[in-house]
Length: 281
Image (cartoon, rainbow, N blue to C red):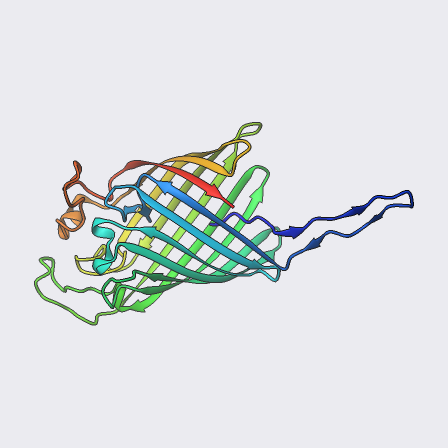
């Protein structure tokens, strides 16, 4: 998920009339990488978390030469995505990445936090990712599993959400694959994503559960364009899910754009083109 730039001490060549002596390049044991992005809509597994509005996002990761890493990532939220009242998502993560043949195996844990939200909104999720490169094409296969937690449970036990079910705990599994490939001699990279979520049927906060859950497929197709001579990347993608309208109606009006937006009442899981501008460091 994160681009890495090494922080290293430059090799110094001592020039004199005597034979030159080259000092070996020394590499710092810890590298730091990160990014800041402006997106037209924050989509988490296909569903808008910003009420189909703009979001500012950023993250930073510290990686040790052993393969261990830790970092944080954050985004503003809106509407349905404001889990229990929070207007911010703050993720803490740590993991370990090791070479495996010609691929890389990455295992770790993400803690999803929603500051100032309800006490039961935060939840933990483990993940494992296997990635590799063949020529200009990069591929990734991942699985994320969130064990039984109250944030993933059904807050209501009936479709009308009139019978409370406090303390219920459910789990969720998410399986996905990503593929991307650069077009030779251009700054363009094509990308695609396909994911499957399997959790309780609540579909999320203020409906029958607090955190994102459900049984559905999401997908994305798009392209990134690196701006030459800068750390900036422009992105465009079409994002969609197969969540049926009958499932959305199950927890409406919560699963729709709220407030005074011109899109008020519209689905937050239907197909939409999302734009992004990212600066990496």
